[in-house]
Amino acid sequence: MSSHSIDADIKVKWAEGQSAYSPSTPEELLLIAIDLLVRDRGSEAARSFIDQVLERFAPHPAIAIEPGAR
Image 1: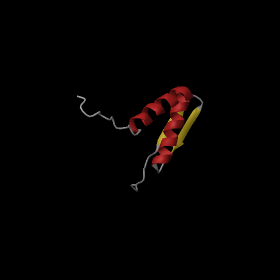
Image 2: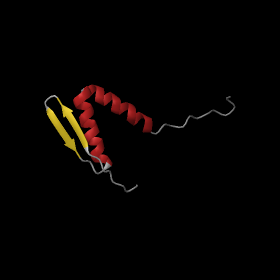
Image 3: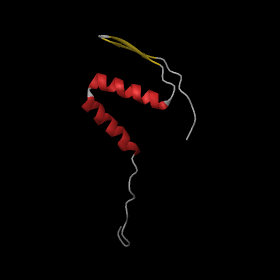
Image 4: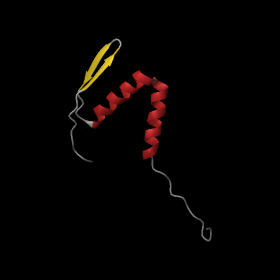
């Protein structure tokens, strides 16, 4: 596992006000991104997007080729 930090200053303006975030880890950045995604697109759209992203990194089973088949 790599060790690194993030230096970011995120400012978001909403109709009802503004939010400011300063994540320092990938985990904090992800939580902020998910929060913003849910607020902007809604929970179902956010879940669909996250499922698509996670699907890209899911382990895929090896395809077995039967002997003699080509």
